[in-house]
Length: 152
Image (cartoon, rainbow, N blue to C red; front, side):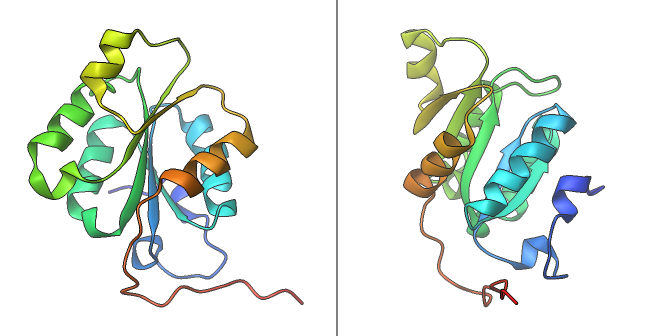
């Protein structure tokens, strides 16, 4: 895996995968991933970002640490419809909560097909995205000590 800039955003110097819980942001636009990774980190989670196929690979490798997947609907390689279909097909991934992010309104038939926990318009407001993360991220048992930034 070739880390993107947003994957390296970590003021503690530790490997982001070693910190839990993780919010996995899957979007094919690098600029969106960079900006939203800061929002995720500000909400108290470790952001890991990737495009479609790479995002699914990361989810499979680190399922135990992923508290929430934020998934763009329209991507190249693997769109937001295929990703949750593959996720539901694997029992160890099926319970990981997924939020769909889209720049267009979704039809009720699409929502039924996607079976996401939540849907959010793109671009999302920072306060809306933070609330969504806090409300929908699943609890992750602490397997690694969380590091908290200390103020001077």
